[in-house]
Length: 178
Image (cartoon, rainbow, N blue to C red; front, side):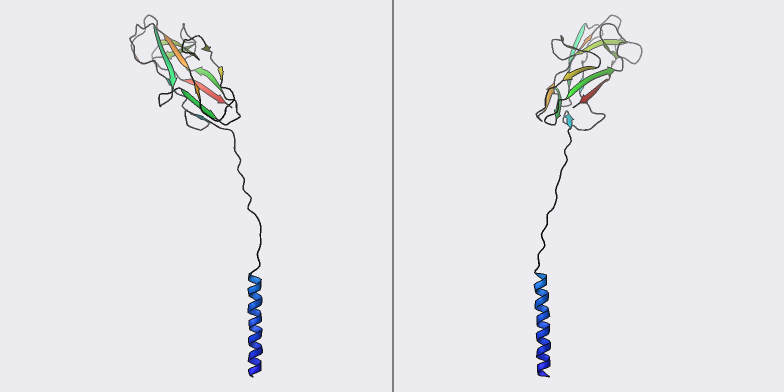
């Protein structure tokens, strides 16, 4: 009987060692990783595809007998319009139509008081107001390096006789392509 127990013990010991040898087997492989980047742009530090704020053209407060008011399109932080696009893209800005275009002589665009009065104005790419941006005019920003580019856009409103006091506004559409 003692021999039987010894044989049984040796058999069990053999199975245990065999199973441990099997547990030591290794398997190798790999993990695939990928990332797809698409070209994109930020307008004044904000991304998106619709409803972006390209800035404000605030002519300030003046009297109704003014002859000329000048302003620059500024972002919320007070700096010039900022466009930051993916490296290798060539962004363009199309300064499209305003709500009141052509409704007042003396400018291609117009500010409206909501009643029946218009103040003519135009947009320019220079502060001297010599480089007019026509309706649907395109501003080429050049090849992007990935750094933000400042876009200087200026406005000049022209006063005219008979304007009543009030708040005059307009909204101009802008399209950024890259």
